[in-house]
Length: 111
Figure (cartoon, rainbow, N blue to C red):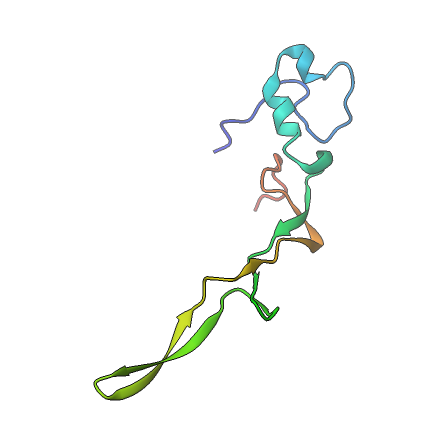
């Protein structure tokens, strides 16, 4: 783990850029792409994709089911059938509190 890190000068993606640590002048393209993997150079994540859906009635939930009556051997039995059609994803939602990006290159706490 951690073997893919770069130890070149100018790797820190959150510092201000200056002419001495410009990664394009050194030919080090990896530090340039790693610095741009965060939104505007910050280690925080402010939005995420929601896992919830809207149905035809406008209800919001993770999953939708409908109750069906199945007759087997003369007995009536109620079953729940999951609905997959006519669902609209909720989309991108804003987080109440910012989270730290999963690719943040620094150990924050060691126990």
